[in-house]
Length: 181
Image 1 (cartoon, one colour):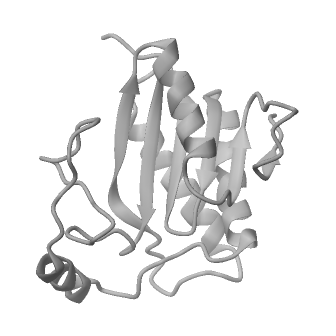
Image 2 (tube, one colour; image 1 turned 90 degrees about the horizontal axis):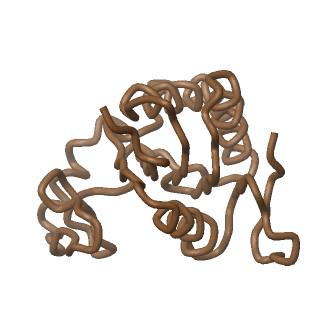
């Protein structure tokens, strides 16, 4: 099996990205790069909101985002995965990661590690449901795609929240960057 150079992972907080919202969303039929997202459908979004078992989960503090980033970095270090970039936002997480394997299990392991640290923190939820069921995985086959994904994660998310980049540009002061291992 061919393994790409890296992967771009995105996963959301539970209930924070509902299908049909005006900001755009994807599903299994609308998830190809550079193709339209689902059209706005407020009835669908309202229906999905009514199906939630608990309130949406957001990483609203720097402390919670730092916990999640540290869990991601520790998991990558433990498994010898190369984390190229990460951006922990209030409602979702983006990662660019080099793996010697298929991406499904590593994404689950990263989400589980982040959940464990949150469960052992003052921000623990009663139900311990932190993340949406699935995540998005983009395969990055060429160096230019990897570089573009790192740029997207670090610089194209709006105001920087909790960001990691493995090889930061020392002249770039626009992000709050945590150093590499």
